Length: 278
Image 1 (cartoon, helix red, strand yellow):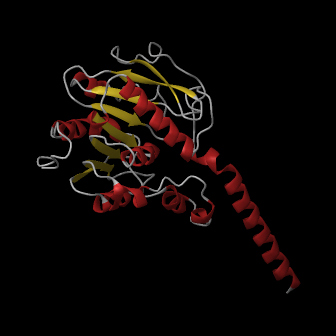
Image 2 (cartoon, helix red, strand yellow):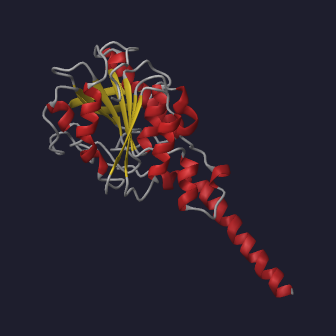
Image 3 (cartoon, helix red, strand yellow):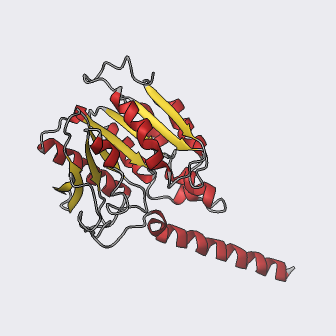
């Protein structure tokens, strides 16, 4: 009996240490920043792109890659996933730039060799800085389309609730970080210990702009059902598309034609959404 109690005690101690370790190092499991800045030339990026430096409200100097619109009204602001970077997403803007839209790849603090450490509040501050930076370039807030992939959908949803933008595109979105983490760590109380939550499920209903949600049916990281649930919670007008056989990391390129078609149907005057989602 003493042996059983001893074994239970050891098991409990190991579990507590595991939980404490997860709590202490959770951000290293959520954010996977690249630590080197790669120039536009080195990345073989679209020649229309240039660096757009911004400073956050808490004093961190960042830079994204920006191509002004040439023949279309909207400029898309793209927030990437937790393991991506400017260099990794250098080709994402190409079809949008070719179609005449403006495009900005926003880079987070701590990524691509930029200063700071990523946190939920920090990424929101970064996103605001990029939007203000675009507005300083003469882009109206209502002419901005926020676009997020994976972790970036959390930033995009937050900003869509703060700014009067023209639309919101969510590619491979999630309900919240705890609800994704609970799938991958079912033995841990992640809902209780998560520091960064990015609660899209709670916030999407307060977004009052057109929304497009795109999932891949073969997403191995975020269940497609989470995107479908966000669609159900989103205000009208909203649209949802599930792309067959597309996973978490190969969906952006495939989703580009769909996203372009959706953006082309957005009204030029905010508030007149008659043709969205048809």
